[in-house]
Length: 175
Image (tube, rainbow, N blue to C red; front, side):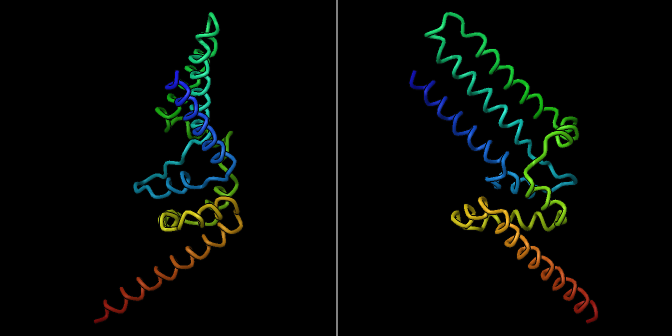
């Protein structure tokens, strides 16, 4: 019984985290997706993750109430179906993501960041995000305006670094 209660608590925490990602108040997982190397960026699917956590929550409620109800199947079946649907979305990511982002959008700050930056700049922002103290991350998670001011500073540092690298290449090539 205690294990089910702990698993239920775990799913509530996961649902809260996923809900914060969906509404744009927790930027870490989306920024972490920018760090990946390779030909394509793999964007996260926060609504699918939220669906999986909700399915786990409903499944756990169904198991917990199975001692009180004679037939717990509707809740257990609904939760299992939601988890299965989320797993299928993650498994078939390459076919899902085009229609997913057509109907369900990531938070507004994500779209603005995609419009304003190149892939290299987004990767730099993601790596610099790792070096921020947790209190500053909390501030930038809650304020998109402050986050974009910080991101502009990172972009300016990126441009300055690229200019220095180009200068060094031309300077040393002449010697």
